[in-house]
Image (tube, rainbow, N blue to C red; front, side, top):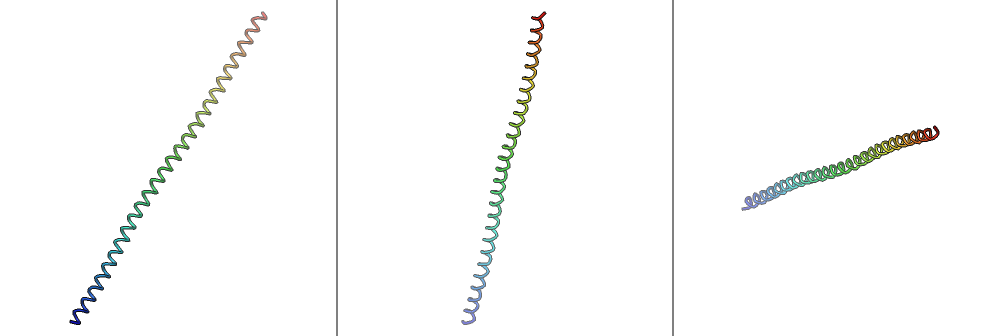
Length: 99
């Protein structure tokens, strides 16, 4: 009787300990895996979003700068050409009048 009680007690203790250890290990593993997955996904999403935003901003800035530069250059060239043409025309007109 006493021997049976002792065996039962030891069995219960071992069973509880093993069960608790296994549960804790499984819970920790699952928790870590889920946490790592979620963390990686969030980090990747945030990085991609920030990257895209930064890239778009940089691209827009570069495009605007290039466009402004080209426009200014074109405008200056056109203005110089127009000015030179007007000046030549005016000179020709004055010379025609003088003769």
